[in-house]
Length: 428
Image (cartoon, rainbow, N blue to C red):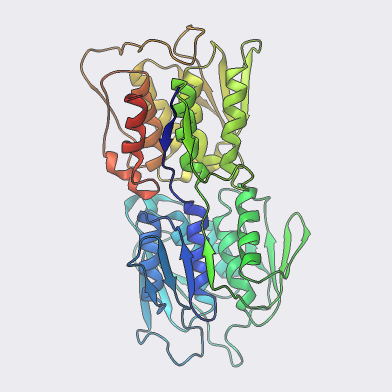
């Protein structure tokens, strides 16, 4: 039987980190096989505004120069630099720590959804080291203005610990980890809670090592020491994205199609690689009373995992570790509950857990007949412009007829070719 050849894009997480690290590296860095998506587009534009050379004419190979650091002669002339993050949480949280390294004040802003996402961790961290925080508009809401106080000595000296709360997202921690080596003194990152998405913190540290820096010391679960150093890298290649692959692998699980994904690293540190284990558990769960999955370290698979659970072997599924999935591009548990009830699903949110009842008693979970919708008319599901939710809802079209997705183009945030790749399963 022939296999479907499926294209999975490069990793957004690796691409965003490579962009920041390249912009902090003396000289120019070539990023090979980057992900050209909405988030990387806005991050590249922000780096340009900060004074970095960005040559991205070739979609398969970008050249990124260093941003002008404090005291350098080629600083941008503007005293205030406006940085538009659109709906990019990583863009916002990776850019904010850069204020420690530059002479200009920055104003971070984004669309309405990004304005709804909490800023507490950024404000807390900046306050702890004397960065001046202000709000040109509504208090504690984007736009957010940041600038350094002027010190009599090197203005990049920060001797007090940086206090961080990584309970809802580890992205700001990653942002500070990447910036701190270029400070003049050893930096102490003091965490007020244990971080979520730990594999992505480890990804950041490993990426820093690839750029020639290895002076991070984990003192204990809540304390990290970062010594002064430099970055050096001429070329970096980006691996495939397990967050996108998770949706494709769920499509395979739902249809029993044979597929081939070229270049997917089965030993990747990306947290969303857990989808393979979770799907295998669902497949073999017929003797269990309930399936339990903890997505604390892999929040982006909540969508495809929920859809798979709807078609499990007549077994209820509980997904827990949801707290940080509520501050993504939308409140994902809430959106899943609201929209999936439209197709007749029994799904509810209880505390920090999502409880999902299977849609069918059919024991052949691989390829049951299409399940009829409650109505004969097309059913419109609203992902609230969240790329992960749109792709998850798209999976339903493999099992149900007349499913339509509102604002389908939002998948351009991470997987622009998603609908073309999903259609290969329908044509199989």
